[in-house]
Image 1: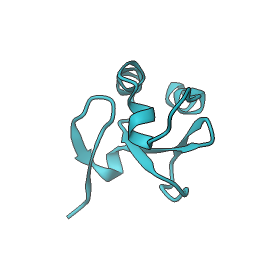
Image 2: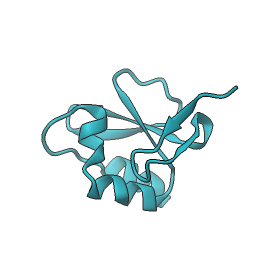
Image 3: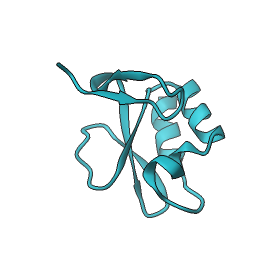
Image 4: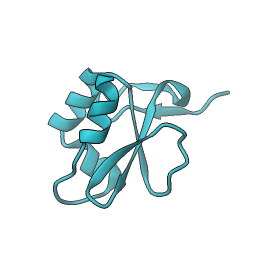
Length: 81
């Protein structure tokens, strides 16, 4: 049975393989496509709608337990293609 994670944007549960892991390194949020980067990770559907919801709800800082302003441009650029 595959592990299930919760998307920080839409808050729905999905198999880990269908979600994108993101991690915070300093003040940047990076897309961790191979799910091996060190640190606390959060999971997000690879869709702009979920990304925008997570930004609006300020979910990145809470989920990654980072205070202050976070640069999410790396994840946004990856989702835009």
